[in-house]
Length: 367
Ligand SMILES: Cc1cc2nc3c(=O)[nH]c(=O)nc-3n(C[C@H](O)[C@H](O)[C@H](O)COP(=O)(O)O)c2cc1C
Ligand SMILES: C=C(O[C@@H]1CC(C(=O)O)=C[C@@H](OP(=O)(O)O)[C@H]1O)C(=O)O
Image (cartoon, rainbow, N blue to C red):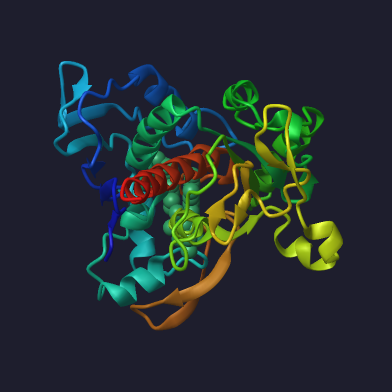
């Protein structure tokens, strides 16, 4: 198992969905950092459960208990650690899932890997519950990045076949990111929000689920960040984003679509803006060339699958009887993961970019 991540900012996450709680240890934060707890709580609220029909009915208060590394409203420089207690587990929902392997979830793979010792209740360590402390860490990373004028924002690009438009240059500023963050269905074209809502509710009504795509942008990252060959911005971001449960794809800039362009269309032509800053006229390469930032926004799309746990009867294997059995999952599940995943993906981006920015400063320090 690998629950530890990072080179400069190091995280260790722990906990299970139906255990006593989840938490994180963050190593490498500078001392003297004042954490804006209201911002942290707002970010947690964007991920929170049990608020309406678009999400799981499990209602978790997500109260943060700081254990170490914070004194007199400042980071001490020691490991910052905290726990978030689980309060609303209903493990009875999982009694039949001990042996019946949910299609699309990690029950079977987890059972094989951990020889049946894994806590399967609520998905155990595979559950999105573990992303709660991760979002707290992301909120702290965002605050450090904001001091450098670096901001991260997202919108829901699609739910099933309902599409929002792509980010355009005019959208890439912190005020729009702030506005988007207030909405559960955060879209640029306001007209699609209701259609997305209907799509999710319809899937729920039909005992099913839907997936979708989130588009994320990182603005004002200076040129020169990234550690080729193996620690390019794309490889580091992709690795972290793929750690988020239910992620099935990531696409930078034009992504797979760039294959349909000619070189003359795909190339992002450079120019000097009126302040003498280097810019590109288009941003098909998502602000990354050779794995290094070029100063343009880093823009990527993340694909999230439809929630695995659905109430529609499905066939799967029972590892005790060794037979195929049909089963309808009861319990409280998200009919769509996408709205709650937005802030998790931003947190993943914030932590990765912060870690890489520190690395880049360290390297330049020896020039
Ligand atoms: C915010 C969020 C909420 C999720 N909610 C559920 C859920 O209610 N039910 C479920 O079966 N899976 C849910 N998932 C997805 C599972 O955690 C995930 O599919 C599972 O751990 C297997 O991992 P994989 O899909 O990446 O292979 C959620 C994921 C995220 C990011
Ligand atoms: C608790 C959270 O979401 C859970 C994520 C999840 C999963 O399989 O990922 C399954 C559900 O768990 P349970 O069956 O225990 O209600 C969700 O409610 C959370 O995100 O905080």
